Amino acid sequence: QVQLTESGGGLVQPGGSLRLSCAASGRHFSVSTMGWYRQSPGKERELVATITSGGARDYANSVKGRFTISRDNAKNTAYLQMNSLKPEDTAVYYCRLYLGDYWGQGTQVTVSS
Picture 1 (tube, rainbow, N blue to C red):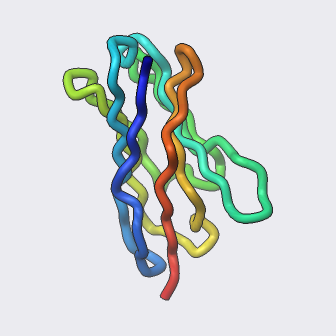
Picture 2: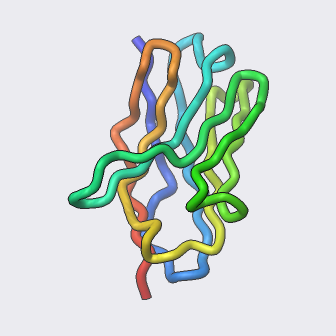
Picture 3: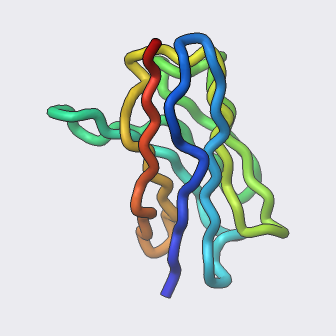
């Protein structure tokens, strides 16, 4: 069984930065695409960024140039570096391990002055 644990969320002012982490148990991390999603109240969950096992990255248009997804296979951990945060980035952020479709419990990010 795979478990994903997100951390790094919190309250930040507009223009600030946060780095989210997603630590995975199990032995499938290095061969799986990883993704970050987010969900705001009253909205559907949306894809933020993905990174393949080979390191290819893709981003939602709303975060391009501000967010960076990365991974450390030695640590079984994926990251989401979020810069120039905006109030509209406020959401619960979830990580997903595509192989087997596992999800973390989510971490709250609030961007507010």
